[in-house]
Image (cartoon, rainbow, N blue to C red; front, side, top):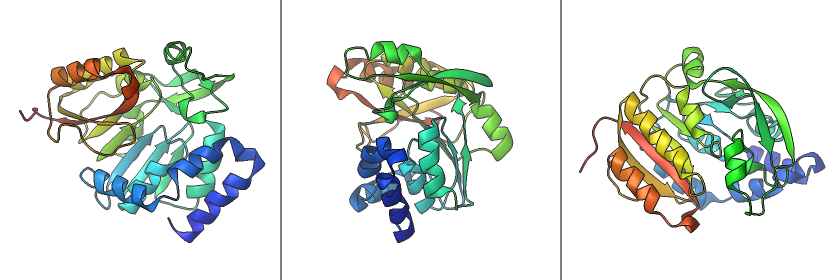
Length: 258
């Protein structure tokens, strides 16, 4: 993290207007070892000069990794508070384009459920909110946000080398707005909404993706170290214990390696 970025993070952390993001900023910035692990992990998908879509950017730590790898980044984020942070951190970088929207199946708008105390789990999915009942989370506001499709992003910005999708139970809707295979992508899954992951796998299979692996939690380490089939991935996700909580499934076109 450069001195300039560090100063911007410190200013955001100390600003009462962005105080609700302080924990996220502390967790996701300022850890050189975590940054190095992220960069090494994503370097298998991202090279200098590549285009990357970061769908669900939150406070932008993945933008930072993709930029350190030399990629151009289109970052899609609907939350006004997170957008304020992203503008402060990356607004001066002409290789980062901020798109103020949610990603979904069709263009238009959607009601977005805001968790003010924990913005990282704010979501466009009412099903996700219901599935999380009893987990101590409170979605205390709703806002109307614009929706853009992945296809529309591709038409405007080009085909990304890698696409990261992390949208709290709305991943299947995002993939419904994609009609072509991409070189590689990831989508978040949660154990409280496994059906969403299964729908994602079905959609990706229909689009020509055939190889899958998964990294649990924030651990940037693949579970299988090879590309397995969608059926095998679905079975693996179904068998995970509830307290596995979440992770990211990584997907590439072609056949699985058995």
